[in-house]
Length: 562
Figure (cartoon, one colour):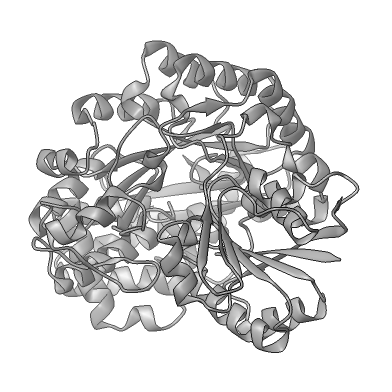
C-alpha cells in the first residue's frame, strides 16, 4: 500500500520541512504496516486540475495533506474532488491551519476522514499503524462509524534529539540544490505575542549541539544556497546562539547563507562582537519590530525596548556584513494610520536591508483570535484571515498601506534604487510620506495591473518626479542612471540616461590609463562607464561600474571614479 504526503508550497524555491519530517520518521525501508510513504510537492501556482491529475495517477491508498494559510483553499478543492474520484481512499489533514477547532474543521470538510494535530512525527507513524489494524493515533480527530468526532489527546512532547535529520535521507542535489532549506533546532517560544501561534508552546526544547554541528556540516558540504532556521527566537539562549554562530564562522564554505529570526534586544556586546567577524553574506537576521507604539506593544504582549533595538541594529549595520530584515505589522490594536506612519519612519531610520510591511493575520489558536471581537477587529472569513478593518484603521487606510507595501517591496527591498530613493527622500523628509505618495501615483497609473520590464520601473520614477517636483526632475536622471547600471551592464541604454556618445574616445583613454596592461576592448566588456556633469566644476565626472566585484548584501557592482 502507498501513503502520499502532499505539500503545496507558496513558491517553488520553498521547501516543506513538515512532510520531510513525517517521511523521515518512517524506517529507511519505507514500510510501516504495509505502507510505503512517498512525497508529492507542488506550488499554489500549479493549476488545480494539474495537481489533481498527478495525485490521482499516483494511486495512493492513503492521502495526507500539509495545511497552511497559503494553501488551505487549494487543499479544500482537491480533497473534495479526490473524494469524488476515489471515495474509498482515506484523506487526512495536518498542519497549523487545521489544528484548532477540530470538530468544526471536520464538520466543514465532510470529505476528510481525520486530522492530525500537535507533533506529527509522533502521530503519523501511529496513523499508518491504525490503518494496519492498530488503535487511533495520539493527537488526532477522527469520525467514528456513526459520523461522530473522536478526539484523542496529544502525546508527550517529542525529544528533539530523537527526530531524524530529514535532509540526509531525502537529499537530492537536483531538487534541493536551488531551494531554501528549512532547519529546526528548537521548539517552543519564551514570549507571548498575541498574534503568533508559536507563543502557544511554552515548553522550550533544544536539539543537542553535537547533532546541530553535524547537520550544519552537511549543509556546508552540500554548499546549499540558503538555510533558514525555523526556531522562533533563535537567540533566546545566548550560549547556544554563540556556539552555533562560532561554528558557522569557523566552517564557512564561502557560499551558504544562514537565516535566523532573533530578538535584537537580547544581543549583548559578546554577541555583537562575534557577528562583526562574519563573512559578508554568511548570516542574515530577521527582527520583528511590529510597531513603535507603546500602547500597541502592550496590547499584543510584546516586550520591546525600541531604544536598545535601534542601538543594536545600527551596530550590526555598521559592519556591512549582515543583512537585517525588520518587520512591521499593520492592523494591530491601537495603531491608527498616523501611528503606523510613525512606526514606519522609526524602522526606516534604522536603515534595514529589508523592511517587511505585513498585515495582521488573525490565526485560529492565537490570543488575537480570542480577542478579535473585544478589539472589534474585522478580518477575512477565509484564509489567510487578513485584517479588513479595525477601529483605528479603515479599509481604505489598509488599501493605502498596501500601496505603500508594494512601493517598499519594489523600490526599497530590491536594493536596486538606493541612490534614487535617497534623492527623492530629500524632498519629503518623512519616508512614509514618500512611499505613500509613490503608491498613490503607481495606483493612478494602473502600474500594478501589468508586468513591467526593468527600465519601466525607473521610467515611472522619472515621470513621477517630473509631475511632483518638476523644478528638480532633470537632476534626477543621474541617481536613476547610477542605480540602473549598478545592478547590471544593460545592453540597451535606457531613455532616461544622459547622452554619452561624444565621450566614447575619452572613456577609452581613461580606461587605458587606469588599466594599461589590458586591451580596451576587454575592459569595455567587463566594465561600464557613465559620464555626468560635475556638480562642482564645468567639467564632467566619469563613473566606472565594476561587475566583477559586487556588494555581497545588495548585489550592486563596485563603483569608482575614473
